[in-house]
Image 1 (tube, helix red, strand yellow):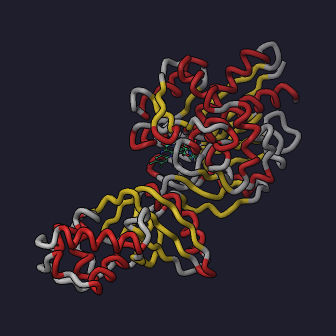
Image 2 (spheres, protein in one colour):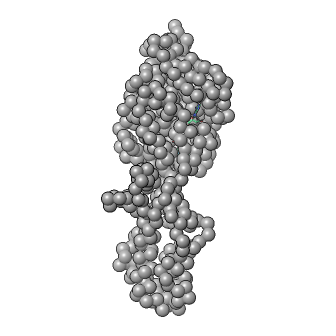
Length: 431
Ligand SMILES: Cc1cc2nc3c(=O)[nH]c(=O)nc-3n(C[C@H](O)[C@H](O)[C@H](O)COP(=O)(O)OP(=O)(O)OC[C@H]3O[C@@H](n4cnc5c(N)ncnc54)[C@H](O)[C@@H]3O)c2cc1C
């Protein structure tokens, strides 16, 4: 019987699930075999800092979409995630959380949240679960390097920065996340080790991120404007267009909100290629230009004695009315009955076709996720073990996957963590 140590680097959503699952797997199936201890090395003073701020503090845990629809929300290689989801999907996650006394609820779009609306509760629950299982959680341990020596009883040498100490491990799960929100601890450290150990890396880029536009000189409003039921079209070179419908927020030079987040990855990639990127904002996508024109005729006739401002504020957000009038050259003081067909045409065009040049995206410290990461061709999808280094596993956002908002990213972190935890124990018992 050998003494073995499994080290999970990173105590985020994925690492916490991986470590706990490893202990459960060991206790349930292998406790008569080798003597395996599990530890987490976490850089920050506390594990699960990012998990604790997810979903605006409410934690959108997962989504009720059936697997085939769920997987459609992932890129660039969704098939890679099938085995992880088949092992531990939304149903298993809900059951697991129920066992830990965390009840969940389902909201619009199938989004699953804890009933408490508390991301901190979810983070605390995972930490307590690990502690109860006897996982050694070492906080304030920023790993500096991971080395591997073939044919060694403890082939992994893990160097910790502050303490200048070395942990010798039999197997390692790297769950260090991506490059976004570095204040929560994820600053892309794991990518370097993965590359040094021979894995290919897809350039990590911010994803689900706001877009800065060239300031519109004559846009005239304070703070930000909430845009509901709008259509935004992202236009790239060679007439490539991507279109989304829903909600967005606009401040002087920044577009944010669900619609923009969905489009952001195309913009980020195009900007990387130094291409021109434009956003077209349609404030009334449910009406064609003709229908909108008819609506304007009706409003202007019926409310002939009211000012243009009063009439327009029923059609577009009040904060945008001044900009609309100044940019179309329609005098503010004109009454509905005084507006001409030329005024109408200009207003119609403004409502349906406002164009903005995208300058850049927000920096990684404001992005929700990282696209890119360790190449999925270098990881076995059935185990999450590296195809290059035996005993080395990856889980969570460090892997080259990215998904839409809606609970998909956390479920992927949980599912890949669960599979990596389970397979790492199976591996240790096989050697
Ligand atoms: C503001 C915000 C809100 C979000 N909301 C949602 C949501 O509601 N639903 C959803 O599905 N997704 C959401 N996401 C995305 C989701 O949080 C991530 O996809 C998920 O946390 C990834 O989990 P992970 O464990 O792979 O990485 P992380 O959660 O980033 O964890 C990585 C851990 O590794 C540690 N670490 C890093 N480097 C080292 C090192 N050198 N040594 C030791 N430890 C290290 C870090 O400190 C961290 O604890 C949100 C993200 C953000 C930023």
